[in-house]
Image (tube, rainbow, N blue to C red):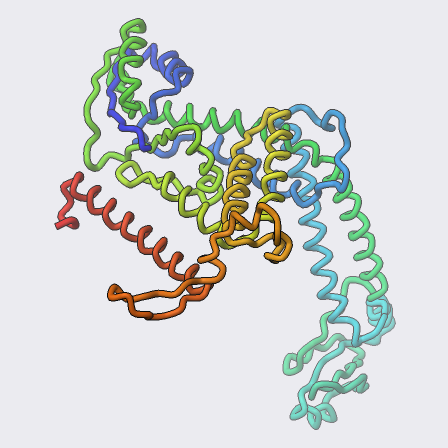
Length: 450
């Protein structure tokens, strides 16, 4: 459920501002209201967080096939970030150069392998050579050029020719072939050298993969720091007094007042205004928390004035999942996999909600597969066993439908029954949504409900 919130106003002496903010961070029950969304500290912290995201995404591409145990190559968080980004930028820079060389190689391939220095040598001897491309309609004009003209090759409607003169001459009416900085073979050799350097850097990046936990720890510290500097930038100061405005769960108001009474902080508690950006705090029973991994994956968080659909989402998501998989044997596999993951995560001290959800969905799949008699896609596997007694035959074989007068109306197959069941489930889902939304709008005295 969405926890009701209260708006709080706290006034402290300006000299006690930072200790008060530190104490509020320790208490962890007040969400401070944002007035200013930027400050030098906020921008600096946010910039580092962006770099951490960039570094983590980069390292994710270099996960070794077998992770080696042992300490990370760098333990200093700032140095770890700097080293990873340096490798990333170096790889990107060299990759861009390789791409540029590839384009140059493609441009030169039809011209063959020659040394551009030869043109400089000939120019020093009084033979200035330039290469041009002439279109089909410009061919006849080549005869009128001063100096010697040597046709090199023709392709794609263009003629390549060399223009040789005693003095340097530039023909502006033709497209000049720009000489490369080095020969084709030299460019290919340079490209291979760059690729070798990239491979070395990629190996270095793979060795940095173990830095991800270090960077994650750095991220967590900075995220906490960002909250603090944001709060610091969003207090209201007037001479020697500072006002701190925020929101607090209704059931924590008494605790805040007790803290304020012992720390010389003036507190006023009011109802939030209609145009306030009220934060959303969701508290559900432990058994309902199992659906939270889905919401986190989808990044779904209801607004304060919206509805918490956790319960109904869990119910219908479970039903649809079980009906889509529709096989008890696969459900058993899911249950076993979920239990193993649950135990493994529990040993590592990690969050087990995803494993619990997987186990729960597996149990639902076992139930649906059992009543429809599907075990590895075949009802024959349970023929003559106790599992056969669990089957609801109307879901598999269908039944005959009669009118209220007792007259035969229609035979429904098992598939028809399942389709009808899906239709009924869909109708109930939409009905609950519409009625709930109507009641919510009436409670909010919304004209939309009229």
